[in-house]
Amino acid sequence: MTEPQPTMGPTRPATLIVSALAGAAVAWLGISRFYGDIPKLPWLPAITMAALAVSEAIAAQTTKARIDRKPGRPPVDPLLVARFVVLAKASSLAAAIFGGLYAGTTAWLLVERQRLSHAAADLPAAIGGTVASAALVAAALWLERACRVPDQPDESDEVHRDQVS
Image 1 (cartoon, rainbow, N blue to C red):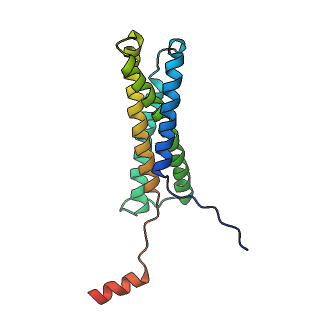
Image 2 (image 1 turned 60 degrees about the horizontal axis):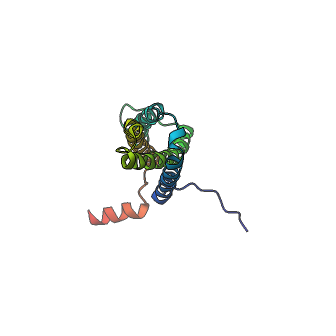
Image 3 (image 1 turned 180 degrees about the vertical axis):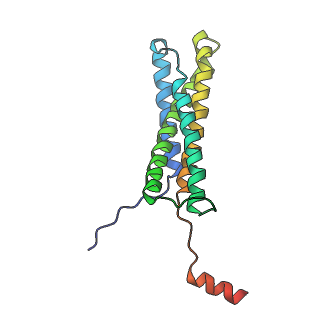
């Protein structure tokens, strides 16, 4: 009996959606209970996620061009591609969780902004974090997709094309 070989498949959207929803629920419950004890929302996490999104988008574009062997591009190192895939999978999940946390916080702040003056002051950072998280999820999924090996034409496809021509 052969042992099953480990495989890594593409990131499932359902995993990201469930993670984001769980993060939003935790954020809503946590912030509604402890908002008075929490310091002002910082911008640094949002800026960091936005910078990561830009970095991963650039990596996706250059990696795809190298895998497709565009003229003037050096060949791609397979180990680098494997590292990019791991980075992309981890980034998409982390960004989905953070996105859920920021979205739950944003929703609560929107509801409470008329009642609490600090809620209105924290709202821009929460919205920025939500947008940066969504950008990082998108860039990470793009990087993961860019690391796929292009489909090789089968011999049967070539024979079929010769018969059609």
